[in-house]
Length: 341
Image 1 (cartoon, helix red, strand yellow):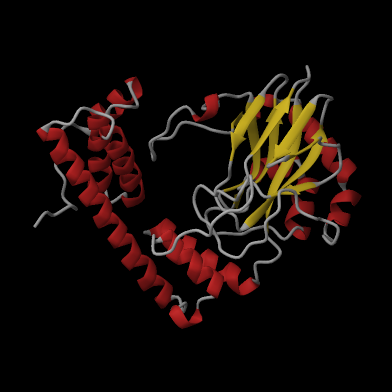
Image 2 (cartoon, helix red, strand yellow; image 1 turned 30 degrees about the vertical axis):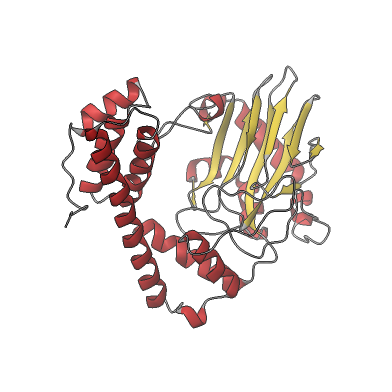
């Protein structure tokens, strides 16, 4: 019986990294990278690299060695999936979320995550297509109706102060970093031409669920207004994200979708020149300074700045209002297990 947990990489990880830097479609280097990640018990990265290697091998002329590598990659992916499923269910039970305690929508989403249930058939031209996690039972929208969001009043009250603090941040744009940055934890191509491209750059107040204390001190009113009043989506080590998003003059953000549909994304426009636009699904809107815009980022969306000045928007994420507090707790528990497995 094959022990998939003990691979024998053909080359060192340093060699694999070097070859992938030269050619990110090198299937054998991708496979070796996966093997090394598995040997380091980095199971999530290993799974991503095995999947990427297998996709690359499918496009190569089949040889005996390649067939063996392909079968081993498939077997390892199945082994990792089975391991993940067992850990996930075992730990949900330990946290008190046994099958009889799981919310119906959460259970359906869990089954979709584990490949035991199909996503519902989408009837919209621009359906929800989250890249990471699909949550069952959410209401479809492109832009959200914010008429009953009472917390917006506090943002409106403090808008001028928020605007002033953002203006000071813009005086030193070197603090901003490209929104999409190269990383070694996952296989990564040139994402829409934006990889390490500062035409779309960000400055985080909160990132991966934790504050950036230095930036918070530079814009205390912005920080306090959002943290104290907004129903932020809080998922351990993942959310909330609160950031200033800078789109440079002449830049575009190509059509894309977000990671999970348990949240809405909020845009507070701060500095918006003319000829800027934003499309979600089939609806296009302009940003108006001071007017909050809330949307589902798992619906295809894109943005552009056709002016000769930079655009700055404050972005943060909130729980979708139809997701109950109990559902939120189960979603948080799920991602805590995922991130520790």
